[in-house]
Length: 203
Image (cartoon, rainbow, N blue to C red; front, side, top):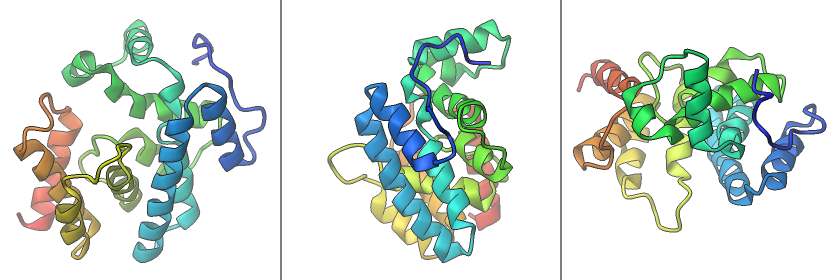
């Protein structure tokens, strides 16, 4: 489906960590590779704590940003050429499409078929209503392991939320970023996730 994009694809998808490293590094995305490894570390720990499949969470974390090999403007142009739904937030900030494109790459280039993995990849930036525990783990791992030098300003709020549940932690992150003006054009999935989480957490 994505043959129109020019990037170096993995030579062997059977060894997922090696395939992800090969793809990202060969396409000049070494910093992204370091980020996904950090996310995978947090995802493994959260999965073990929650009694989830550690391997599934690790695989989703490794693949969540694999579409960094494609320019956001090209993602938007391709989605529009396919007649796919594109949210206004994605039109204004095409980078947001990377979560949806990463799901496609995970299936096509890395032979992933586990819906737990694919769903977690697809909503790792915005989350969505009625998220699975796997969605929540990868969403939170990505936020905890953000790819900047300083500490995330919402870390304390998220950690307090984690003392209660994954849902409380996700809601703490969304509330912190939206109430603090960090998200100027919220994705509808994020708004739907916030509403669902608030109800689930009794907020």
